[in-house]
Image (cartoon, rainbow, N blue to C red):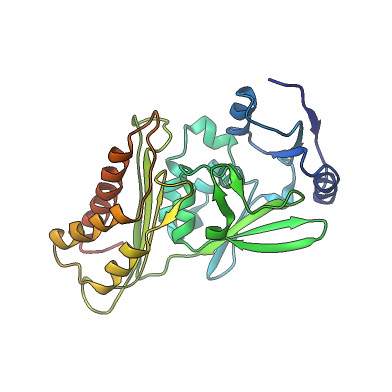
Amino acid sequence: MKELDYFFPKTLEEALQIKNDLKGSIKVIAGGTDLVVHLKQDQVNEDKLLDVSRLEELKGVVDKGDTIYIGAGTTHTEILENTLIKDSVPILFDAIKSIGSPQIRNIGTIGGNIANASPAGDSIPALFVLLSKLHVKSVEGSREIPIEDFFLGPGKTALKENEIIMGVEFEKMKDNDIGFFRKVGQRKGTAISVVNAAVRLTKDSIPNKFSKAYVALGAVAPTVVRAKIVENALTSEILDSLDKIMYIARLVYREVSPITDVRGSLEYRRDVSINIVYEGIADLFLKGFRR
């Protein structure tokens, strides 16, 4: 691993100034669960690290009424221990619970999981269906980026070189919202997802019908994707049979463009994408579409 200059700012203002002065040559680190691996594999171009792990402005879970804000430096364990997340956004709770091992969750942060920009990042599909927006900041000011506009490709984001992710804000699930997060890996324990998916459905007044649908899949394209064809079918059909659910799930095939790698073939990923959506919605159907 190459030698690196290490910066440990005491304040957010200092961190933003360092990021601005050294933009293009410095990488932000918090938990480092992904970044350290990339450093050891010589996959990081920057030769300086900016440690933001002690900045209180990047930590915490905040109830903002209809939305929830999570600071980028909040660890996965801290998120799981907050009852607001389990009660208000169980989809995100289940997604974060599936990340790594307890040791990784104790150190890794939600901001790091987002900034890593892996197509297989487990928190990302859940954040997609919750219509999340990222809060980012630089010495020039603050801005918000819808999460669907943030990812440009594997490891690539819309974050400017002098910006830091401050946190992520998303909608709470309402009383008539149901959904799920599921993933398939090569083993039951700590595993990178072969395919992961999140679905959020808003129940209509008509039984077995939905007024809104959000479906996101990971590890099936260069970035996490919204399955818009499937979403449209879910809101136009009455889901009154498993056959109908399978018909809709098969539409996933038209929306994914996976690759073959060491974790799975293109064909396998396509089949898993269909099955993971079908099984999740079928499970909700068999429970009477109750939360």
